[in-house]
Amino acid sequence: MHFYLTWHVKRRIDQRVLSVESLKDVIKCPDWRHQQRRGEHGGFVYRFEKTVKGKTLVVAAELKKSECWIITAYETH
Image 1 (cartoon, rainbow, N blue to C red):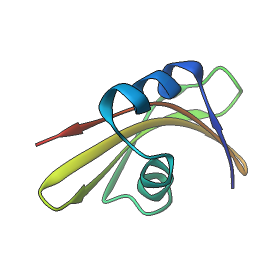
Image 2 (cartoon, rainbow, N blue to C red; image 1 turned 60 degrees about the vertical axis):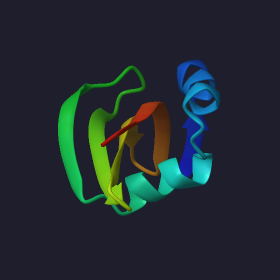
Image 3 (cartoon, one colour; image 1 turned 180 degrees about the vertical axis):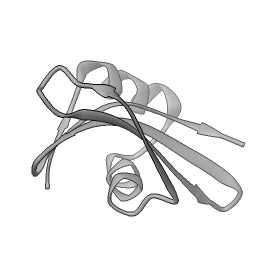
């Protein structure tokens, strides 16, 4: 799968001290995935969640075939 980072998620990664690899891991192996809406690139936007060490990482990304545009990400407790 080929990943693209939107300008929004690039800012959020720095602000929220997240790693690109952890975001990719959530998308590849989520605990939970829910389809949200149609995306701007012709794919579907999904909300992915994965819990590690008591924290849940939430990632919104658009998937189309083998391409993925990561839109935003944040942690919940």
